[in-house]
Amino acid sequence: MKQILILLIVFFVVFSCDNNQNHHSEGGISSKNNSKKQESFGIVIHGGAGTILKKNMTDSLETAYLEKLEEAIKIGHTILSKGGTSLKAVTATINIMEDSPLFNAGKGAVFTHEETNELDASIMDGATLNAGAVSGVKHIKNPIDLALSVMNDSPHVMLSGEGAEEFAREQGFKMTDPSYFYTEKRMQSLQKIKEIELRRHYKSLSFEDPFIKDSKFGTVGCVALDKNGNLAAGTSTGGMTNKRWNRIGDAPIIGAGTYANNATCAVSSTGWGEFFIRAMVAHDISAMMEYKGISLQEAATIVIQEKVPDLGGDGGIVAIDKDGNIAMEFNTAGMYRAHMNAQGALVVKIYKNE
Ligand code: ASP
Image 1 (cartoon, rainbow, N blue to C red):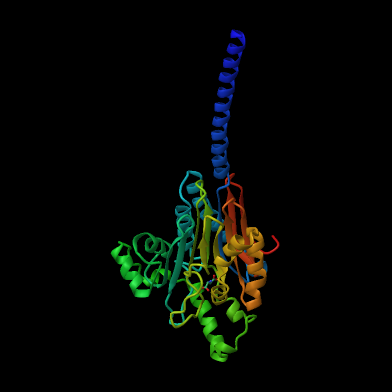
Image 2 (image 1 turned 90 degrees about the horizontal axis):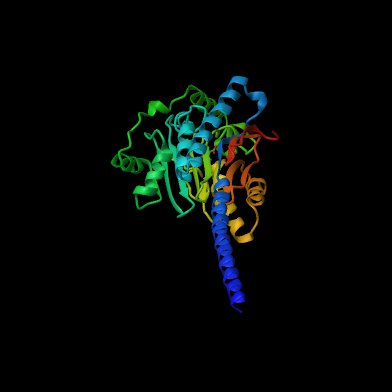
């Protein structure tokens, strides 16, 4: 009897140790889950969608775009791989593209009809659904940083024009002379469009008209999932060439140009802003995932290949979901784009069917 009792005690001790171990390995599993989560971090960027054709591209320009996209995404990826937040990765990555004259954001922004540069940007935190945006700023070198400051340091979501710049000054932002944004290429595009405009009334121009199609190139955007499972999205642009009347596109509009929600995905848009506003592109992709239970890719395809073109618009998005799945969907000839996963695998592309 005593022996049986001893055996039973031994059995219980062994069992409970094993159980503890299991618990540990469940901890292991849950930390494995965390590390699985960690393994699924990722980042996706775009540098604008449009009539981007290989036949119109020189080798050196193509290389310049590919190298800049790679440089930008690697900055964000390094932040994420070191455990930095998706918000940090998004802003730092966008800063690189804002500082490059290749893109229609920051330096290299397109010109308004009045030959000024009016910059728009927005950012969203998928963990809190906090967001910040600025539109029509003229003296801010990196508008995405100001959008972040609006989110973090003001009680508002969106500030515009002089008020946004007054806020920027109060926050210690340096005012940049507008001449910084000047690039010969963008000025020439404006003059070309103005010449066409002299001959034809703006309203008579159709969607297929190169005047419209080519007047908006190179908005930049970034979406990221960090090691803590937090999503963020950001977008920065100079808008459309020859824009007037303080026109504002989709880029600074939360839900149209930018959206992030940890429950679904993070999206940054680029394209013909008027249509992206009407289709509420970024939020619609998230909403379809949430309400219909469809995948990120399915939702992105429906919005970009059906809903936006049905309205008459064109453009694309980059997106990443809470599990690290990505989408880079566009209905134009090309979209400057790149993505990197947790393993550091890098993909950089420009044209369709690459
Ligand atoms: N969506 C931007 C706008 O309409 C332009 C672009 O992405 O190319 O302002």
